[in-house]
Every structure is written in structure tokens, then in C-alpha cells.
Image 1 (cartoon, helix red, strand yellow):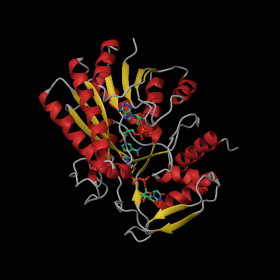
Image 2 (image 1 turned 90 degrees about the vertical axis):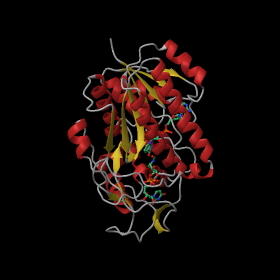
Image 3 (image 1 turned 120 degrees about the horizontal axis):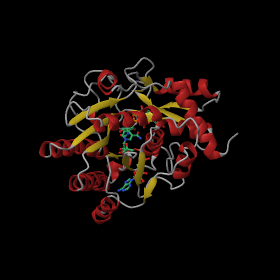
Image 4 (image 1 turned 30 degrees about the vertical axis):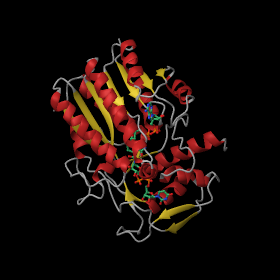
Length: 342
Ligand code: NAD
Ligand code: WQD
């Protein structure tokens, strides 16, 4: 019988790509999502790619009673991947309680449910945001947390602590926290991808929407950083590569290969790219000319961060494989597909 994986937030951006990779590897998937930041039609894309439909349950994981009922129905879950959360950094500064409420209550409800129903494997979506501006680059998993720049970032720090304390008190329970750097791109089929609501906060959706004529111009935030070209540097990781890191993590736990009950891995490429390098790579990969201008720094942005990936490469046995040009082309193909651009 196939192993059954619960994917919370599975109709979202990273959750949908992970569901596809899990199903491609022969896992069965049940998704819980309340569709607060995704569309049910994402399931059709997953079916088109994999030929199979994941189970889908639509409800809010903050609702403890519904979650308890869920675990009574789906009795044999082998592992949980917890994506469901709010993720807009700017909104979290304006509405901190909305973020603490959703991101922490969902986590605690799930951990309680897992404990009660004896599911022992848990993968958590953490973020490189926990590092802030690191003292040393590339940043390793043992770098200290800096004071979070936003309530959103703080929810990831607190969540990692909640998981650690839960594991210390329940030794039959295992978790892996994956600290994602900057996920970008879409599935090569262009059938699933990122679906930002309103004006995108993130760089690559803003670029693709500008190229599609939905936005007038891209503002490159900051030209005076202490970087080779003055624009800020990040580690952009292809979303399918990122999805595969989850599959490897699930297999590691199911096969009893974890070295300790709580493991933490950076999920990045190990290479930093500046905003201007991304703009140039996008133009080169797609042949589209991008309207952009240099602009003020965005408040709260850090200068430079990229991952030390050796631990993930050697211990987890996972490595980013898809290059930047292919990744940016996939993001453009997805934008063209949803906008009906030929
Ligand atoms: P997303 O918004 O596309 O997906 C999250 C999904 O969770 C959405 O489908 C949403 O409807 C669902 N959801 C939210 N709250 C819920 C609740 N209470 N009950 C049920 N469903 C709920 O976001 P994403 O980019 O796929 O991010 C997934 C995870 O990865 C999040 O935890 C996010 O913080 C983390 N992360 C994302 C990035 C990034 O840049 N995208 C980087 C680092 C970490
Ligand atoms: C990337 C670079 C911008 C938009 C955020 C969260 C982080 C994580 C990933 C969840 C920066 C520049 C952007 C634009 C620009 N999410 N930029 N013009 O800020 O690195 O990280 O998403 O955990 O927590 O903070 O990503 O895509 O917003 O920006 O010049 O219109 O692009 O200044 O240097 P960021 P981003």
C-alpha cells in the first residue's frame, strides 16, 4: 500500500509542487487547505500532471474540532508536511495578530493532532528569514537567529522553537525543518505555479507581471548596497527542486535515516544573485525586454543572504539542480499560460 502524506496548504504555491513530486514518487497525498490564498482549480493542474487526484479537505486548521474529525477519518497518515501559513511580510507588520494567530495556532493544532493520533513524522516550512542579515555568508544552519524583521519572520522562529520543545517532550516524534531561501519558478508543464493575489510583493512574480504588461515597470529596490552591482543579493531556488527536498525528507524519516529527532536543513542553491542579475537573466532566458528602474531601498530588506548547502547536499542527499535561466523561463511560461499570452 502507498504511504499517505498529509500536505497542509497543498493547493498553495510550494504545496502544489510538492504534492506533484510526492505523487510522482508513488505517495498518496491528502491536502488540507482553506483556500485563503489559493484556488481549488490547482487540483486540476495536479491531476493533469500526475494522472491522479489527491484527496482534498477544505477547512481551516485553526478549527481544532474539524482537525480532530479529519484525523478520525484519515487514520493512517505516515507523515505530515506543514505549509499552511500566511506569508506576506508587509501585511504581517500591519496585522501582527492575524499572523501569530494563523501561523502558530495551525502549528499547535497539528502537533496536538499528530501526537494524539500517533503520526510520528513532520516536515515544517521554515524560512531563511530566521537568519536576518547573517554575520557570515554563506549562512550555515548553526547561525544564530537574529531579531526578526517582521511578525511573519517571528512566527517562523517561534514555530521552530515550538517544534523543538515538542520533540524534547515526545521522543517518539521526529521533525525536519526546511529553511527555504527564495523559491521561484513554476512546474515545467506550466500547469501549476505561483498565484499572487493583488500586487505581488516578491520579485519574480512582479517581473513576470511587468513583462506581461500588467505592471508598468519593475522598481529595483536599492542601488547602493555593498554588493558587486549595488542591488541586493538572494539565493533563488527553483520550486520543483525545493519540492523534491520535501520528498527526500519524507523518505529519510519513513526509512528511519534521521540522525536526530529534529533536523534542520537550508534549502537553497548556495549561489547569491543580485536583483539586476535576475533582471538580466530573465531578459536573456525569455527574450522579453523588461521595463525597470532603480529605486529606493525597501524598508526592512537585508543586503545579502545565500545558503551554505553542504549539510543538505551531504547529509540529506539533496541538491538544487535546475539553473536560473530555466527557472525564470518556467516562471514566464506559467505567467503566459494564465494570461493566455501566445
Ligand atoms: P501559499 O500562500 O501559496 O500557500 C499556503 C497555503 O496555505 C494556501 O493555499 C492557503 O490557502 C493555505 N492556508 C493558510 N492558512 C491556512 C489555514 N489556517 N488552514 C488551512 N489552509 C491554510 O504560500 P507558499 O509560498 O506556498 O508557502 C508555503 C509555506 O512556505 C508557508 O509556510 C510559507 O511561510 C513558507 N515559506 C514560503 C516562502 C516563499 O517565498 N514562498 C519562503 C520561505 C518559507
Ligand atoms: C527579493 C529581492 C527585493 C520586489 C521574502 C520574505 C522571506 C521569504 C521570501 C517567506 C529583494 C527585490 C523585490 C520588487 C525588487 N518568504 N525586489 N523589486 O524580500 O528576499 O524575501 O520572500 O518566508 O521571508 O521576506 O524576497 O522576492 O520580496 O525580494 O527590487 O518589486 O528583490 O528588494 O532584494 P525577500 P522578495
